[in-house]
Length: 75
Image 1 (spheres, helix red, strand yellow):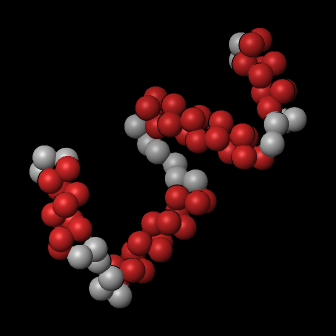
Image 2 (spheres, rainbow, N blue to C red):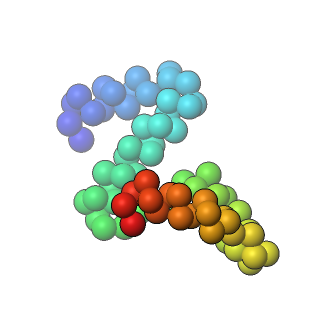
């Protein structure tokens, strides 16, 4: 580990939890870029479960909302 990284990680211990989580998100993105494997956070995993449960119940965005989003993105 480089000396600058080691110093930074020592400082991170004194950061607020929200800032530590933000740094962890960046680190996951770097790791995914390096390995090709992205590891979801607990919050992301919960959001995916929630979305899957909504889909299982047949809760989808109305067609007009999807069409509007498609139009904004030239799809």
